[in-house]
Each structure stands twice: as structure tokens, then as C-alpha cells.
Amino acid sequence: MNATEAKTPRPVMGLYDKPMWESINAKAMRLQRCRTCRTWLYPPGPACPRCLSCELEWAPVSGRGRVVSWVVFHRQYLPAYPPPYNAISVRLEEGPCMISNLEGAMPDEESIGRAVRLVYATMPDGMVLPRFVLDGT
Amino acid sequence: MSSPVPARAMRHPNPRNRRAAAVVGVGHTDWVRDWARCRNGERPNDSYGYALEALRNALADAKIGRDEVDGLIAGPTTAYERLGELSGINPRWGDQADAVLAVAQAVMAIEAGYAEVVALVYGNDQRSVGTQYGGPEAMGGNAFLSYVYHSPWGFTSQGALYALTLQSYKHARGFTEAEMGEVSVAQRGWSALNPNAIMRKRITLEDYLASHFVCEPLHLFDYCLINDGGVALIIAEAERAKRMTDRPVFIEGVGRFDLNRGATSLEPRIDDFYLPAQQSAAAQSYAVSGLGPKDMDILQVYDSFSVHVPLALEGYGYCAVGEAGKFLRESRIGPGGRLPLNTSGGHLSETYMQGWAHQIECVRQLRGECGERQVAGARHAHYTSDVAGKCFSVIYGR
Image (cartoon, rainbow over all chains, first blue to last red; front, side, top):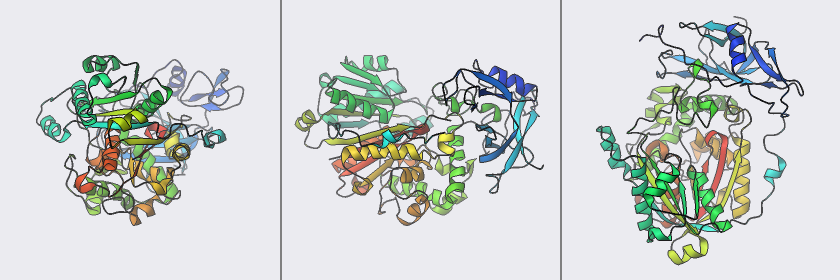
């Protein structure tokens, strides 16, 4: 099997994940925000971890964030991901951290702290993934 | 958000469990033999078979019969009931736990009077059955959402979680690749002296730096082994332990603190390096035991990946925060160094028994049975683990 035919690993799809992935498919990612204390949630869940309120709303994210850390895989674990490929941790402007990939460049010694911007990548099998590019590119 | 560790967690606890219980017997399987057999395509045992072999050896070491055991704690890789059935043990206290939690549970059960002699039994056939620690079916994914949640981005494997940790740690502290290499070089120095170790060939820092990346910045030598085996311990109430053996190894103190906030996105690792939880667990165990880092002759660190070691050196107070790199370069943790650390070779070089073999290494060092790798006159051994931010500190003493 080559990479273009390989299936992108399916996301964990709990009860609260579905609206997020629908918004990603629509290329306008939304996350939950607490109506009580305004805390943003990732991954999605049933209640706000800060104040335990269940009053959550779905709201669009700005797409801005900063790189917290990065890795480069030199070994193949998944058919859809032939090495080398990267993964990054991004601190979203809204607060939560998410794991994703950096597009357009491989991360390097200068990457941590760099501003990034959300883009939507369509995988060979049609799955849409939220990814990031260095800001200004 | 508020500080990850509430102030009350740093209060000195009532030191009740100091020397309440002692290890009176240890046993393990011949993982060097089984490594060769697994490499030859054989399945020498299943997890239960390894567990039972280790239990037989631990009972023989304690010189007791099975009927003296009134507590049973099964490791996480065997079903509690089936292990109890095969062991033929009907205990008045039973539980299932990972290595360090099993020790803590045994002390708690003994101190509370629910058991007097507890068998802790672990077996794992992970090599021969090809247990996967990455991919969509990664082991532990049902218990830790972070192990599986990021797979759409290709982010998978335990190594990746710790590679991401090391990268941000290097950036935050100025920690270098060569400083990281000191850990696997030192642990090979120990395993070269350990006839029970699977990987005994010494490596140099040059070998480390020349080795390939698996998940960058982690090199091949930063990863633990995957092998089959089993470990068992017998822990008894302190007074009874003294009657059972003339060389009991006491549990001097236990501390625990967990970081769960932001865990799926790995924030406890890549933002905090587990530090506040390690500090809190350390403070609890030091208060209970009346001991501190300066009293420790040996440090055993849970080392699924080498990066656990610098995090532990800072978190449990062996050096100042930010100085683990300097400590590794100058103090040395290998044979002849200032702080003997993972004296068996650890998960990287001896055997990957998920923390269980570290317990018996503490016991054997304190009993003076370690041959060429023996730390002369060792009185106190400290075990630390921080798996997924669940931080423990256990102090053993004779």
C-alpha cells in the first residue's frame, strides 16, 4: 500500500468530539467555551474543567497560536504517515494546547515560540485535518 | 489557572507509615534466557506463566509457604482473578496495580490491618505477543486518552510523547543532546556489570550521538527494551518481617501527587516537566521518612525513556531546577559516579518490567547482593516514577 491510498487514522469520536470534527470538515474549526467562566476546552468534553459548569457553547477559534514543542518521526508507525514527518504542539490563542503538524517547513531549533496560523489540509483519502503554518507564510 | 499543586499538598503529613512494612522476599524470571528464546520465535510463557515463576522465586527467597500470604496484588497485565486462581491464593485483601502503586497499596493494606503478608505479582509477555505501544490500538489507550487522541496527525507511540517532552525541556533549560546521552551511556555502564541484564555491551557518548533517531529528538538508545518476564515481591508487616528474616528492607516513606489538568494535550509534561508533582511527592516521602536526597545512596528512576532521568533529578531535589544537564555531565550517575542511578541498567538496558524490577534492585542493593555492581554500604534507596504525570516517591531502607 502506498501513502496516497492509506487511510488517515480515524479520530477518537466520543459524544462531544463530533461537532468539532464537523466544524473542521467545514474548514471553520469550533471549540467549546464555558458560558460561565469563558474557559476554552480541548479536547471537547461534558463540562468545564475550571468551574465544572455544563453550560458550554461552540465558538470559532481565531486560528492563531504558538509552537510549544515539536518532534520528527523517523520511523513508520502508520500507513498514512511515511517518515520523515513532523508533529507539533501548539498553544492556541484561546488557551488550550493541541497536537498537530507543521505544514510548509520542517520544525527546527528556532521553532519553539514561533507564531503559527491554522490551515486545513485535505488528506489523500479526503479527511480534513486542522494543521498549522508559520505565521507570515 | 491556579498553581497546579495546592498549598495543603505541601504540608507535612502525619508520618504514620514510616517503617510500617518491609520487603522480605523478591523474585524474578530469567529474562536473559527468555529474550534469546523470544528472538528465536518461541513463546516461553504467557504473562501468567512469568508471574507464577517470579512468585515461586519470591516465596523461596522469603522462605515462606504460600499459606502465609494473606494479601495479593496483581500487576496490570494479568487479570486479578485468574492470577489469584493460578497462584492458589485466597487472600483477605486483594487489588490490581502497577509497580509503584502496588507497593503503596501493600503498605496501606498492612498499615490499616487488612493484611500482614502481601504478595505483589507481575508477569508480561509483551515481546512474544508483540504488544503495541503505538498505533490506533496502543496499549493503555483505554486509560490514557493522550495515547490515542492525536493519531489523525500521525502522533503516536510512547516515544513520541517523551520526544515532545524532551524537545520543550531542551528549549526551556538549555539541555543538550550530549547531556541526554550521559544517561544511556551510564546505564550501559551499570548493565555491563549485571549478569541479569539483556543489553550488556558498553556504549560511548559518540555511539549515542551517532545512533539514529526514532522520534527526534530521541535516539534509539533513549528507548527502553521490550522483553518478556515477571517480578514478584513479598511485603510483610514490620514486626512480622523482623521475625521472618534478618535482612528486611523497610519502606521508609511513600509520596504521591498527580497532574491531570491538560493531560490529553500533554501539558503536564511539555509545560511543567512534571516538576510540581514530583516536588510534592518528594516532600511527602521526605517528611514521612525524615530523609532527603543527601541521605540516598542509590536512586532508581522509572526510565521508559532516558528523559525521565533529568526530570527526576530536578523534581525530586537531587539538583536545582535547570541544572540536571550540569549534574549529568559533572556528577556522573554510572559506576563510580557520585549518584548511582538505575544500578541494574534499568529499562534501557536490563529489562523492561514497567517499574517492577526497579523495586527488587532497590531491595538487593540494600541487602548487599549485587556483586560487581553493588554500591558499597548502601543504606537507603529511592525509587521515583512519573508515568503520565502520576508522580511517586518511595524510599527503601535497611
